[in-house]
Image 1 (cartoon, rainbow, N blue to C red):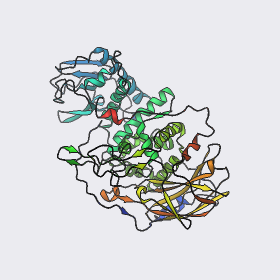
Image 2: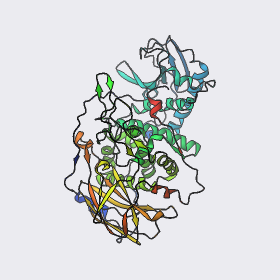
Image 3: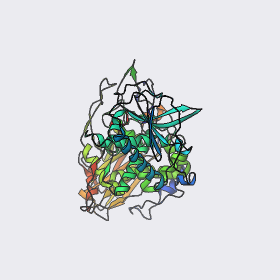
Length: 541
């Protein structure tokens, strides 16, 4: 894992809310796209879009022939093709060629696919003619002072001749996981984690995401999961922590450690997250949601909608934060539409080949009791029962959302509505700035249907195809995407929703309405919950 050292005092401040609605004048044409009131909406393509292939900069890198001798304590080296493994005088006896040989074979195989099929470059060492490197943590190298029985594995670097050279620094444990004689239950996951850290070494040299630590995790997971799925043609599994985005859509996209205990959100590079009492770290996040940075849900959506070249474009061009960088290529209006589309398709689980994987994650975490993850804890908030749907109160036909789970910047609320007519109309009354409302549902045959989205006023959808379970979802989205420090982290986007016609009221928020996405798909491969990457990035076991 690419480690962060971010120690900051976190003040317990009251959350602020937008007091007035501000709609950007250039958004009117973008919002008014339906031919007639009530018509379903078809998401248009993006022009310009985001597209980049690293082959344009590195068209023909050859297999490196050299090894960078950047650590004088090295006493042993084993190499194969693009990779080398190096150790010091205190190598753990479990690390033998029986583990090293298959480890190098796995790294060569996976990174060849990243380069040759997906168009990604190797790390800095390979670009400069040196083999990509794995160093053995705890073996007496210049990299650390650890014991050869200590655990761990992450992306690190050695500073040599004025340059920081990324590499994998791994203890004996994940290396030994490649030994065929190792029958530990987590051996396969440890092997995958070594690839994960090798991807970090590639990303460390790229100019993108310099102030977006969350994307260094989620973006890494995206590349590995996509390569694995394409090679096996099996899209039935996504990492366990992808479920955080689906179960709590009110959390911002660019959010490290998710929904914090004071109701605010972690910033893109863990701003507001770290708190210590002397040397003792204090838990400021919540169970499950605190691993949000390991979710690859947003880059998965971006790849689905914008194509294979979009995520590489981010790493090449979004030098600061992700959404701001994407806006520089898409334009402000299109980026806001992309956020709206992302939130709408979360509600219908309209994620292409990954749909059943997403459903598995929702079902695995729906109804979970979520509180502080461990002690000592900062605030010990009351348990929240996990559901993607926001609690509302109805006063005279107007719904008021629970302020506890109002959306943050780029976040969304989902309100399930029971319908009683052939056309549904709600009146959207934003209090926060730059918000949208959209009606969405899956039909009784599982087909996703979307209304045009509005910035305020009436939102109407004709129910030409009957909605599954007689329920449609109102998706309320904040399209703000620029992070401006604590004020942004603590901001909540409030609104009211008036039920005008065709709606009898809010539906139960503790019912799995999203399972309508499974209708009409009996022959599809069922989804399964994937690995929790947070367990394998910081430590070896």
